[in-house]
Length: 213
Image (tube, rainbow, N blue to C red; front, top):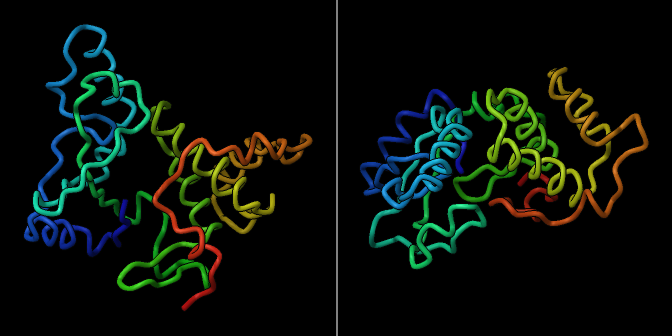
């Protein structure tokens, strides 16, 4: 997933298309709808589309060009049973900064680290982005569960962030959700549960800990 400033978003979309990236026509959470055959699997597909609908509306999804396509391992989701021989193509997803709540101009000093042409948010900014995005999702499901896992189990727990990491955030709804989730004022959550690796995201931990270049 790549976050693009709103003003540059359409230009970024067109640049990828011009470079041979092909539009991923269906939901972020699904594979080709034609593979969901049978009433049970069709029901799974409808649920996936519903749960990812807001992400799908606010993103543009691409397949890598055929000559640069590396086949990825199937994600651990229910629909992996749909076609055992099916391989999952590598995707790239563009998200506008307004959707993810990460903006270059308003990011705190030192919160972004440059590596080539990519800016990486530090752990506190990434956590804030996950939580602010989650609390505005209209439908609970797999996508919101992923955001919750990334925020609590991975960023907050695995990187051992302080409980007050979001105190400077002006988003009261996000702060309230986070404080309740980590049980900040009711004894806290145990470290084993918090840091258990339930999954990973495309996030460079070394860059998160490194200061600005």
